[in-house]
Amino acid sequence: MNCPRCGSDMRLGAATIGINPRSGYLSLALRIVYAFWPRADRLWFAPIDRSEPSMVTGQMQAQEAWRCEQCKLTVITPEKPQRPPQWTVRISEKQQGKTTRKAVYDALRRHRVPHPIASPAANTFHAGGTSEVVFKDAVGAQAVATDLQTLGITTEVISPPPVQKTAGAAEVKA
Ligand SMILES: [Zn+2]
Image 1 (cartoon, protein in one colour):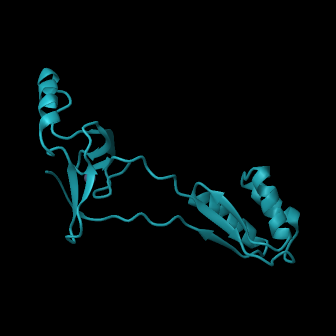
Image 2 (image 1 turned 45 degrees about the horizontal axis):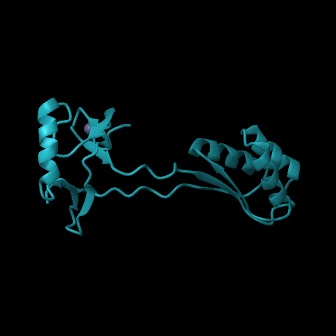
Image 3 (image 1 turned 90 degrees about the vertical axis):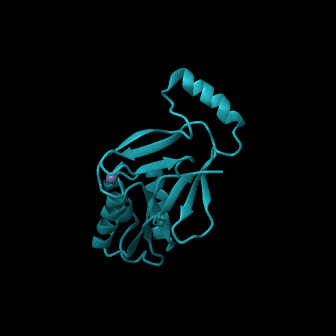
């Protein structure tokens, strides 16, 4: 992953709160102390616009984290990432007169869309309905859309929603 602040490579690792995970017996002792320490084990994110702070993590277990050695930016991901983004090629309805079912099917197959997906999509086109084919990357989706457009078919590439980024401050406190 590249650092969103400076663009350098980030290193994958783990983030823990309160104790150095490599400090051996001391770590074990501190772990016991922390078990009784009241509420000093939560990492909060306070947005810069002073809206309600949210807890990044309250768990002592290591969290997946990325760190930029260049600018020291650290990204902690306490939750598993959402499902990967998708790009949808949408073929508008009522275009069946523009080309054949086979032309649409062949165009999809040329871009490695599997038969079980390409066939019903071409059928829907032929029946005058709106068909949608989902891609894992923008380049693949755009290539299919361009190919279909050269056949005279109106298509639209629908991008995944942009990920919201919020600036603020992170701190460990009660
Ligand atoms: Zn950086």
